[in-house]
Image (tube, rainbow, N blue to C red; front, side):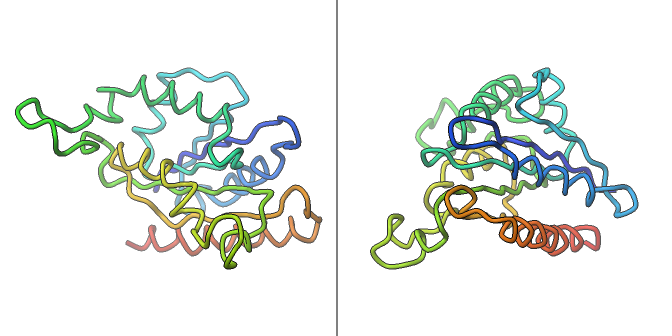
Length: 204
């Protein structure tokens, strides 16, 4: 039985209603069931949470899944607050021991003090920006992918805990150009993504 911890990092603010991130969490609840070989715990950052319980979920899980919209090229403030609080609470409580450096040579080995070895994480992001903003010459992101550009810090954040990255999935045009057909297509894409990423884990 593989243990999955899924976090809904979406929230309602400004133009964003947070609905699609909630939808992704509901799809997780349908997929990660005992009949499929999984045990699931969840957190919605919009609801009250206990820091020690959240630390326990990280330490318990084989895979952590983050669902969040990208706001101003980073995590939304609710999720950032959650990470700041939970990661700090997790110091020497199973998430990380230190920044990895030793006093006799503090110039090396930064970021190697994580304690979540042999665990993995996956991120999904939602965007107003179209995917062509990342792929076409002359467009805003200079042909730099979501993962190599905007999410670089997010990936380093998880590497600090010694988590191994799984392939994530990104959903574009969910504000200005959103349609029901697009949402339905994205839901099916996510279901197939889960099958492709997680069913092999059960077989390994």
